Image (cartoon, rainbow over all chains, first blue to last red; front, side, top):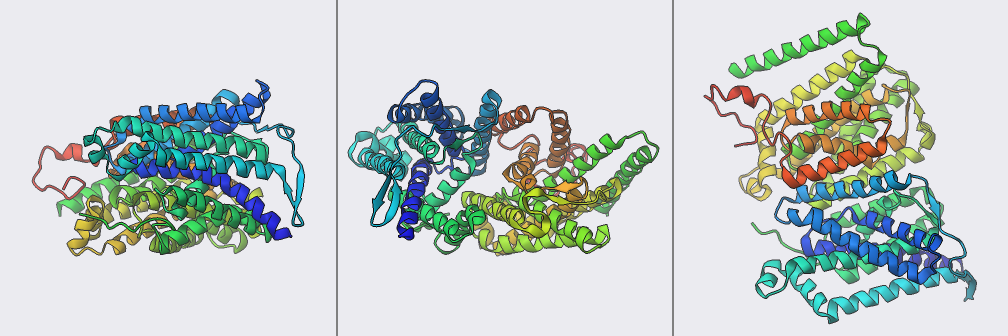
Length: 292
Length: 316
């Protein structure tokens, strides 16, 4: 039952991508900006979790929550300081600023604490092998899966059942009209950044737990892959980001399992290019026509 | 007739600069350190100018320029090291290989717009890098040893050709078509401009000269590594173009020169350098999104006196 094990591994990896991809897709849906700094918020989340566990002797769940809270604050600060002024400027200017913010976060982190990697403690959560239909599944991957699915259900609840969620959907549909209806667009955008960044922070802690090693530049590649996942699912669509992340995780695991582990990173970009050529709107996206 | 006169004045001026520096190198007034700095500046100028054609003139936001640099660097190094070709031939082969790569990448991705194009080009540059990383024939991750062959003369004339070709292309009918694509793609399309053709042409020319710079780059230092052509290299080239002003070639040249000198002095402190770069990028985008020069050229300053013919540049 090798394949079942690989499938579970792929889904655990995919749920990390999915959590990051949700932030990309929500921000893109609301202000049409690829937030390049999102991968670095994920990195900050991993480090906050690490320091919470090692320096403040917290257990896994408090560390997860503190990482989410600090990342949410960081996301709002980035939005308020850098992106808010750029809402009416060109797309290229906004994109370049996002790249700038991303590099700033990376290199300020290196400047403060050095570039050396850190390792999450192994015994943070008890790791048992559970035998299921002949496949050895670690309890850690089940925990990861459980946490990510809980967070996604929570997100669905926030987006569909609360007032903030309703405002977010309204702003992403038509910001001008939402403003006329009395919705505070600025606060809604900040809330989107806060939620997206909190999910990225959670993904960071989970990533640290699963892969142990974290370093200041770890956000770049998962960030880009999560973006691929968001495009794969249809950017702007929340279920799309979840599905896209899972599919990408499974494909990457398959690519490594059949012996092309060095090409694993290329797989994501090849998928991206194929999807952009054949179905640029993604799996769940709608085709939009360009208006003059 | 007047235009060609201006062209010859600049060419003669460039040759004078070349002769002076060459004299200083042969007479030993510029030591190896400064000669190397001059060559690095020239390579970065070629890269900035070739990306300027894609981003500044045609308005296609490509952030994978280091991929073409890598193709030119590796292919030309392979030609000299494995097939014993003369340096100049391998430079041209490297550039052609990069141009072919630009065509192959440009055809599918240039149908995309803005953000998607940026990510797709970034993805392609990563795929190119990973390919070289996994290719044992060129040394893989441990690097590829290359003889030092780039001289001031080679670097200077390669850069001069880059600048002349790209500035003449910009002023030509095709260059104006590219500018029309940048200003408004749908409007350009409806005026009968084959937008895909011009986007691909600009992309291929940009890739060709990036590949040429790649050949100079690989033969300038004894070893090349796949990690030299990562996202940060693309970003370095991007910042020259953005800081100089999107659409200004002289802006790109000035920014490339200044930033190369600055980064040479900040080599001891790579983190500080990146923090300064990223802060500069954010601040320029927030307060002066058109870059330092906007779409103006430095030669426009001299033109204000006798403005008989408004030349087609960015402002039309």
